[in-house]
Image (cartoon, rainbow, N blue to C red; front, side, top):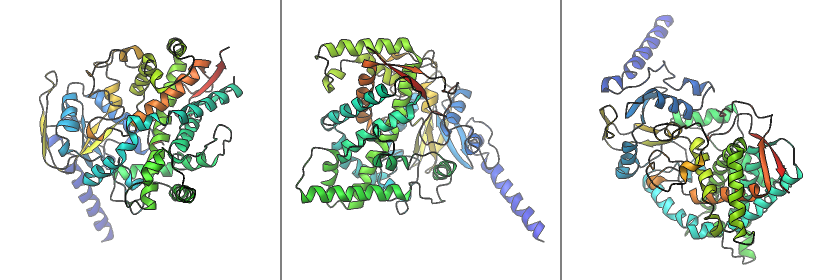
Length: 486
């Protein structure tokens, strides 16, 4: 009797999956055949490939189609390839696709749950409006002295460890950690002086790779109804305690500073947890996203010495006009520097795919004339995937896509606005993009002015992405040597 019951359950499960797996086929949408239970993401679940690489691979397999149907385990999702459809979904018809496809339980994750990236609908809109002034150009400009100070500490560290094998991920993490500490909390991070510095240890608690951490983030994407706490409790507690101490100190000593902490602490009726949540968002975005981007930009410049030398010449030429002093204004004249950053972000976008959830019925049809004519009506709740890694590496948009060619970004135009989106696009574009760009410019200009960076033999070749991270990160680290230029 028990055997019959088990066989019946297995049969019903198999029947359900087979029927479910016909979802896209029955709607005339092309796509790879899914595996039972795993769907099309098996390589990610076993740690062989990142979800970004899987989407990019599928993108390449269907060069003539505007979209491709896949299954994330048993859940149907649609990969969008047509830039014109991307434009409509992310901008023109944004009201149909307001929310990112990620679930965070606010009861389990009170700080992460208030990050604009995971918030939905009106709550997202109100929070973004609340935080936007803190990321305005004028406000970001006030953070430049903090970035420059930390960049000089970065340079001192390289001088002290000249000729040694150094991990770019570690170096860039220290740099972004200390700029966040100064910019958001007015705290000296001191991570270049002390590898066990308190603030560095706090921020690293939420990005330390591991099977369990990777599993939790996978669950939040693939089976969100299994509620799990994503951020370590020690991280939440540390940020709340730091926020509480700084609030108390500033109030008792009547301290006023023109910084991000001051702006956030002035939120009307803002509770301690709400203030800490917005500050933790600054940490998460300002530390990990920026350090990932900066790591790969340094890596590509170390890998391409001719580009590095061209950048160095531009930096020194521009600095001569300002008596050798770096400033926000003078950085604007370093066009090749900006091109190097853009090219690094093209090759290695930290968040290498965007997702949206359809919130009301919507028909998506081929727009670009060179692609196959397809049309399908999307049901509310269905997920859309925008494979940035695939788009950024498409030779149709970027000739010789594997090569680091900053010159392709020297011509200012918006021709590739919907195929090049390292910070997203539309109303949900990354709030901290200006902060990340300035962070990168200050570090790169400071270091390459005085140092020659080369790849170390310790670097594993070919470089692969670490599937244990939420954002793109080099597996085994990105190892370099530095040499002070006399």
